[in-house]
Length: 581
Image (cartoon, rainbow, N blue to C red; front, side, top):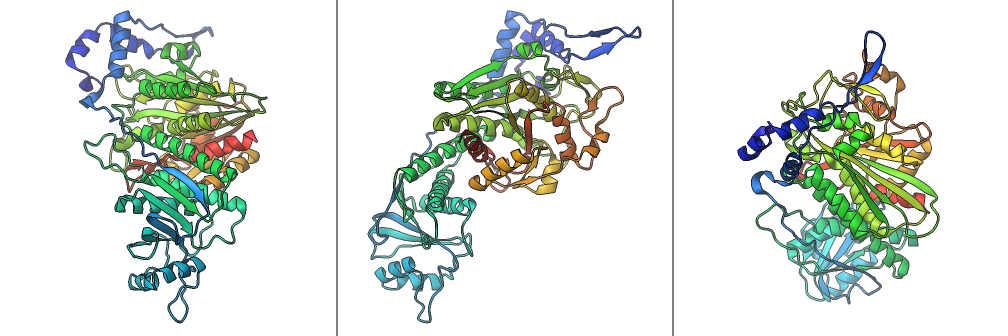
């Protein structure tokens, strides 16, 4: 399969040296053997790799199948500002009003009772109430209407439904996304957003609401058109948020929302990028770019296969062995520009830039092999968080961002069902399914994270279909033995609006993970697959370290829009900030 994507000239050129290099990689499993006399020894044959093979391996890693390169498209730059101005006096393209069903209540004379809607309707000579009645607009979630009516400073008035009530970050982020969609459809360059009812909100709620609207607008206006031959640029340039206060605290929060949203877009673009473009080498380069961009607080250490071999990462290298694209182990480290370090954290992300399933190849309906570029969604969340934190620069916290990146392919040098690999903590794993490869890469990544002296680890992975079956496409499964860590992350998710559900770590299920010839197998019984996967990862975490595993196989991808979501970044950043304060 690999040979079919390599040009014939490259194949012939590499026949002697390159094939030997990758054949020898298959011996990097560091599997301990015991002779009949009881003598222990290990096999770790050094790769036979000439300069020519190294050069050509790099060339192949850089080559792009299909001659595809992403266009360099600038993201739309939107200016956000919080203002206290009368809605009737604001001048611009669209005045967008977020309304609940209660706000749309009218009296016996078909007049609005809500003060803002009543004022707008008065300025418009009753046309707003009349138009909403004719269009049967009731404020239900998902409803919107845009009217071009004379009498206001704005050219158009847009009403956007929030449902029966709106209080969550997700609801206000949805409002921002609807505002972006409205602006895009009207090719508007200036928009103001106001809530019909904001009187009962506390100052903190107003700040968080404005932040959520900002985030939703940035993410809503964004489209990933890098791989399209033609695309329309959105015209939106400015968004004013009215009636939610003003001042430095609010401005700081709006800036924070823009930074996190920019990081989410970065994460989406990583996951959206096809595997013929985003190889492990390219992913590592993207990580290094982040570190260079924020070099005052971030440093990068990118390990090659040879360096990982020295660290005895046999589990990770076993997965990587079949691919002509070399693996890269990514380690970024955030340290604040000044002040003492109060907490040391690690974020570990699964980084399979493509997963064929290996010899247990993905086949049949529902296998989703065509979107297996998403199998690095965990790494996108981790690197996106690094980008955001590089901009925000929180004090008092050190954060390690770790990704064991590779491809899971099929070749004569690849890992076979029944092989035994040895992880960097010395534990042996019988591979009974090559399509359960993510946990093998995470095993060595988690050991490495523990060796950095961290106190808490959160790993994120598109790990199991079983978690999607259990929780559906929009909720991530959370596994942790630590109630304190669970509380921290769930509090962060309340701010981000992302959905998580805590799952059990049922120790009795470990029975199905036992091997007759090794310490463990890499897959257990068919039932409880997400749980046994988490129990597997637990074997590679130091007991003194608080650890959480997040299975994000469902929410990493939007099936309706066929694009990545950037899931996890917002919550991770909030969690780090909570540990910073």
